[in-house]
Image (cartoon, rainbow, N blue to C red; front, side, top):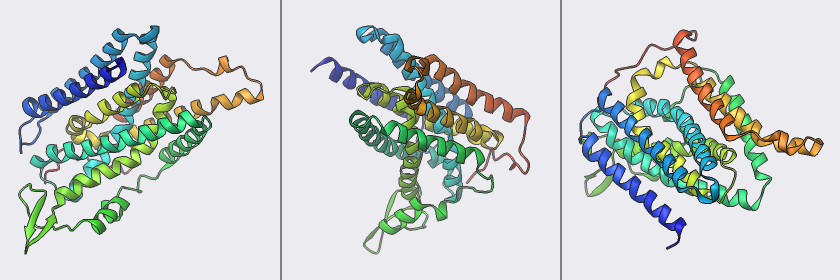
Length: 331
């Protein structure tokens, strides 16, 4: 077993042990997650993510430890900030399907684990494409610029509607579902036939909806970590960010309506990353490539500034017709 395989093995074991610790000690089955527990869980996942950064710095392969650690943190914060957008959609889905608060944790965990599988496949495909075709980075860049502009200018009235969403329609066609009360079960039997409950439908929907977010976030991470051989940095930053989503959901659920301008902050991050991807094209008009390079710390500062800035700005400015705080919507 070579060094790279050992690192992957250690990473897998750390994730497995962390999940067991999170579920076994920080969470209790069929109980609503309190704000205090959500804060504890969020701190746990953030500290674990930064501990892995320390491991990257300590491992220091070929003198690139500091550069790799900075790239990892930038990618992690980028994915973490983009994942915040998932939470607002998750809240809408949970409210629409009237999921009980005590079932939130279990449903989120399964949905997030499903999302991780899709992201691993996306990263593997993206790495292969970047390695084979350099020009695909420009396609990614244009896509992110388009997404950023669309997100920044989107109408607040264009709310996410689970009933008309493609994922809901797709699942409804391929899964035999029932609206019967199942007391937290994912599958029930009626008249000799197996039916998936609304909880099972929500789990699959969360995983599929994350594909849409991954289409934005996976290309973005390749500008922070452009070397496709650094797959471990890409995988780990993505997985740690997604695994922290569950606790972040409970932390932000009560404050979802307070971040009026967070979407604009995320949009600016996407625009920045997209433009950064397109910069090498300026070399064709005589601009020195060295002048086009933005250091890793610059990307990190932009991401942090945009997210924190949009949250702070939201605190002191409210949009017109902003919805009332949905802090404690219980089902």
